[in-house]
Length: 341
Ligand code: KG4
Ligand code: ZN
Image (cartoon, rainbow, N blue to C red; front, side, top):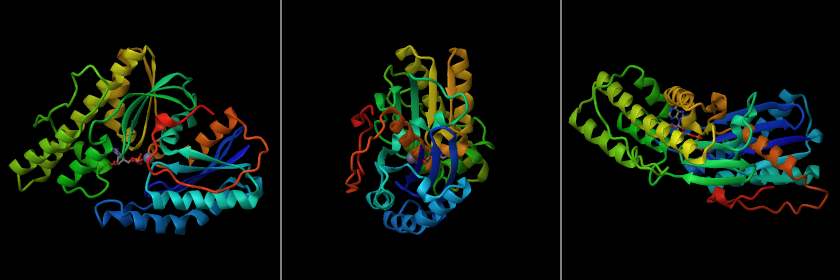
């Protein structure tokens, strides 16, 4: 079966075609990062308008790249939530209208389920069950994944998400938006000169807290104003060390507590090379295995949505019932509300 996937929950329009026998056939993406950078963060109304401009041309391009036509599509998967309501409405209404015109079923996908399953798009994917670390701009969660739709929350952030902490710290260092990638590049030039706290490192639960870290960075910045490039790099270095130390320690604790030996990492911060290096080394010491999505599938994309939809379709074929194609979006949607297909 051929599944078209549509992602439009935030500032990336992603479209992909996934074939349940042949795998991922094609995917395209438009990122709005440059458009929002001017404002220092995502402007929801601008995001929605840009999704409207992009979704149709990207769908045409994806079909062309895969050498398929609209008539080849068997089902359409789209992100129904969580995310920005206006942005979600664009992908949702587009997907439902197209499905109505083609008389094919739709599958509404939870954005985080897309991220969670993204590492399974790679070669030699891990089997269930495994522990998942989901670290994005909006989430820092550890989950036990037993099968599609069976997700048990093991730990969560008490305040800022890891990506949010990267972005806020980058802003304090004047690195622009979104600052995660820029901060980690700058950290390459830094050395261990400062000491920042490792929040909740020693607690025996699996929760995170990153907002205090950002406040400690602010104190450092104020003490060293005006910041020279060397000081900025040293702060970036120590901040990245602090966040990756905590994430690594909690992942290893989650593996020990669950008795599992497989970890998958997803979400934008999963692209961080220092985090990957530390997780790989720690997992090896604990005889565990870590899987990641390719770098471009760490951040938002259509491939993970097409794939999550295809996995749900495989687990529970939709049958021939008529679909109404009426729709709604779910800007707030807890992953634990998902059910097995
Ligand atoms: O998963 P994602 O694209 O969007 C959400 O669903 O939130 O993640 C974006 C987040 C941003 O906070 C960005 O700064 C962060 O991921 N990020 C990184 C890196 N690449 C992206 N953070 C640290 N290091 C990176 N290399
Ligand atoms: Zn995301």
